[in-house]
Image (tube, rainbow, N blue to C red):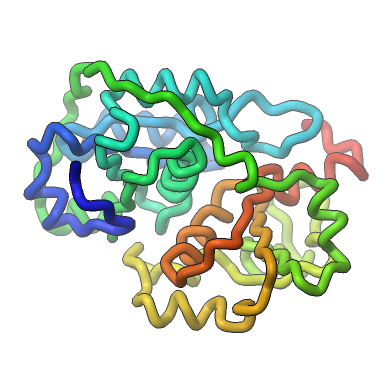
Length: 278
């Protein structure tokens, strides 16, 4: 059993590339070009890394409600984890992207949501690995049989009814993780309606890392959330439950345990009010 970590650096991963208990996952993705990540992975990835796709692997099919990236079907996702060799609570899963943890944090949260706490994010991601001139491969690793029986943490998520009930509750903080101009309704590049959930505060997810994709220091993470120490509960959302996980990562680092994800996010919230043609 490897000592549990939340963040690992490229040097640590280099030293553990051959460790059979380490499973590496590449999850690079672009919302505007869904096939891009798979193509980039094929062109080159960290040696030994498997690829998991936001749309195909980390989400389930879009419905009328539930947002643009509903949580994946649990048995299907567990089977995919087994197919890349993940052994529940033995393997350390190291995840990376090139988007400041935007997609890697989704896997980090999902694995813990399913009861597997041994998951870490690669600091600096793909770009940091490349700059260090560490081993890159175009080979897809051979499948190895894992063993993953999920134990879902059902109290880690909330639905729209819970969110609406919390809008006027002073002890509950609702955090919008999107860029400030989207939160303020000045710009909306993805969803058909601009705006934010009534009563939500804004803490953009990109604050959690620096522009090069390295995690900000612990003191910085704690400062981000210092106003919410007395909150009974912190509900975090974004457009569709993806980048909200970066803020959940930050809250975890800062020592908060009373956090929940609204997986559907803004795209789910507006689906009950408007005909958004999902």
